[in-house]
Image (cartoon, rainbow, N blue to C red; front, top):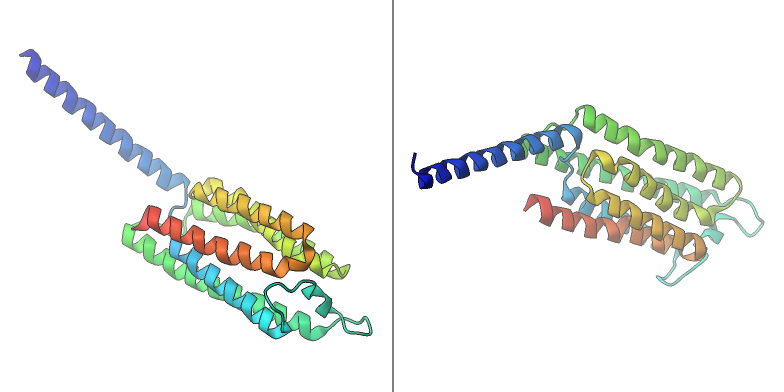
Length: 222
């Protein structure tokens, strides 16, 4: 066999091996990581969070630089303001449900388009690792509420949400790890400037989600 023909054969063989390795790597990634998450779901979650924050500012008649929003949690006589808690609970539930519905629909659409599974063992592990810190954070927020530390609830939600993303990142796209770190940082800053917790909440759950969603959509879905 001439040397040039042998070299071409060797190059073709190497290319085939590289393609095979690439396919194996892709299959391993699909089996070990949940990659069906849609970047647009982050954008919608951020928009809903900002709308929820705007509703809170309007409800409390605050401006963007207002602090100590949590003082509305008690009446002049020191008793709990039930209207405050009912509104914020309702506001949070609406934002959460709207985000989950939009996220589920967009993720299923992406999975169907790319032929990826939506609910498998990896998705279950992702959800479990996400829920453990979230459930812990939710219980901790109830403890804060019990002790009337209302101003610390917004920072706590950001911190525990960031920890949840960090904990679940090993089962999905690595980029979520960076979002989790940023959420923790924002939460820690908010715990120092307690009076502006509502503003930091809007930045963490609103602005960061929108930026993250746009980046993920541009990177993986365009």
